[in-house]
Image (tube, rainbow, N blue to C red; front, top):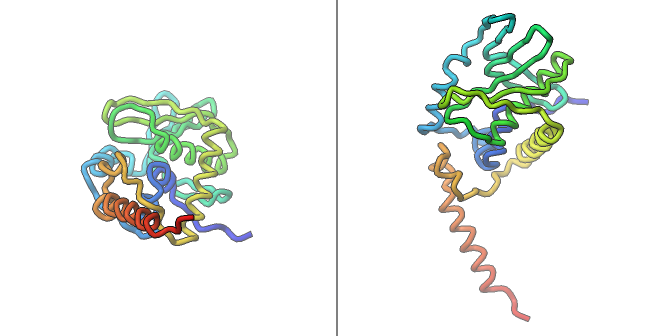
Length: 206
């Protein structure tokens, strides 16, 4: 069976946040920076450099390459802790304050699935490190999140195969998106509304 085209781990977070953002980045190779992406880059500055350190028997690997042949995923983990008792604990770095975001959790769980396939060990928990508050938020690697990863991978692969951009969200998410100028969500949203109104005006009346 041929190996499917590899999908970057970051694509899962992008899709969960906004399918159109994911398509612009991973289908059309479009990207731009804003204050949020620059803060994210600053938060990742240390963990983007490969290396390791050991503290109290815990070995922490930075910028560790991971992949899954089963799911066709590839990418890097910011930090993976290898504990003396055999536990493997991925940690994903994000800028901003500590708060629950599904699009962050799905990327972390995808990393865990890659590590499970590579090591043969079950991973039950990981963490999101929120750079703004300097605090970790532990995430349980639940069956529901595992299914969400697989469903998201399937949706991204279908989008890439179609070659089509999903429609814009045109909602509160767009204000913080670095691709707002490229995406033009409000203009496209207004055009869609106009087309629906025109279709209604010229529809046949019984």
